Length: 153
Image (cartoon, rainbow, N blue to C red; front, side, top):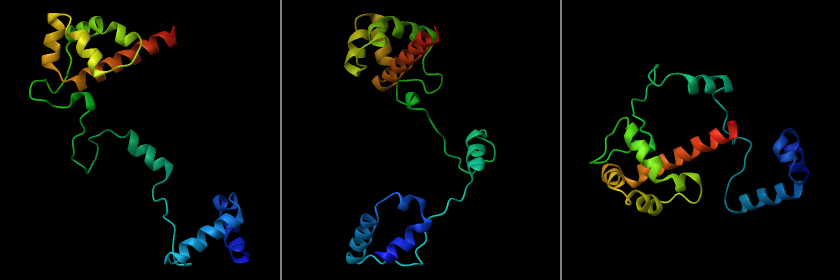
């Protein structure tokens, strides 16, 4: 116990835990053939907070070594849906009109969205044009926009 007490003196996180708990945990690790030694080093943070923020804010094409393409969830390519600029203004108007009760309140589910859009021919065309995943994301987005309008007012 004394050795454990001496070892955790310099560690802020371990000082917050009872010495007995630290001792028991170390003993359990050693008994499970885990070797605890002074040579075991904890991982070190290589990037400073400033570097992480800079990397986060830099444009995607600015010296990025990773050439992978990031596609937002709502633009998941499908065989019958457009892959860029997914929803036209007319489609958004139909979705907002037909799914107004869903956007206003209640659970957002694929079944509710499909039922609401199947009520009109324009809604049925939208169901054929887009996946339910894309439509669900759009309805969620419209709800967030509505919530933000209410909060700002």
